[in-house]
Image 1 (spheres, rainbow, N blue to C red):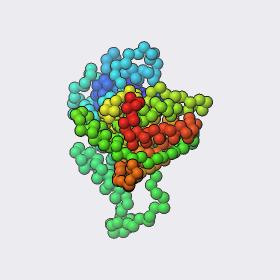
Image 2: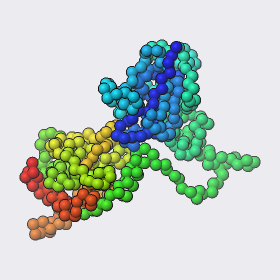
Image 3: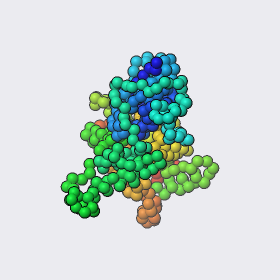
Image 4: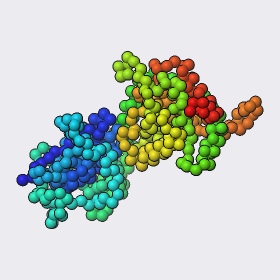
Length: 444
């Protein structure tokens, strides 16, 4: 007889306590293979697919799309043949009873993301007609599960369609899909919304019914990344006595150096890479700024390595990828890593571990066409350098008025870790290196 195995949401790492269900990748009655992704979830760090360590027949799904599931709570149950179709992942065991000697076979977070060529039509058993050959050992039939009733599977795939329906109060069970095999499309939900707004009144001729304007605006729930950002910035604003100083700098020579470097063979060097290299050198001179105040506020932890965070715009909003051990990398190597992480953030494929552990942040808000900012620190970091747009401006150069490429540098710091003299010294050193990049040679 088949044995029912319960698979719970594993610890996805970095202290995360739960995740929101974005999309189910399997259905009740479907035959799945060991390590096959069964659900796509959104954490405070990224959207990832979660593979199941059991192979067999899915007997129940736990959690609706949009619902928050806690670590350790059930995700799916699977009917497996005794002694077959089981291969628990070490990551799963780490959250349960496995000891430290458990063998790590494959990382869970990020595994199975965006696998090309995987068909959206899956094998099912006990759902009309003859069952397709299972991936693992044959299973006689779906096994009823007493723990919870299976989640109804609706003919909709896109999480955007589900979210639109949820926000507009549309019951997807009452919507007729216009897509292939009755698939519910975005247009179907929009028609349902329009029908709700302009439905015919009883006893009157069918036609649009004027609606009184609502006195209450739309409430957008804080979830996933947006919720994590709100909590982290709120904590930073409450706990850190931050101060900001700024200076205008003539970046003409820095831009000329970049053009010279990019004229040679090899990877192109970005302005951000040059600024990152300047920051690593500056932090060697002012190590107190590469630090954080301890959780209980009793001390200052100085970090031996520079894990350089930088602001990047991703498909889920603004994120802060981290370049590990930036002080050990050349300018070219930093540029390559910045490019890789930026692309991963843009496509949503960045791993959660690559968004944590920063010790200092570089924020290039000049890409948005603005000159200055007073950002909130990325808790628990103690400092952040902001860079505005580089633009041609009148500037006194060597005693004469000239048109130069000028930028504004702003520096926000935790006043608990240093005084204004240290912060000013750091910012002045960075500005001097921007204006005279050759000064870096003294530090290399």
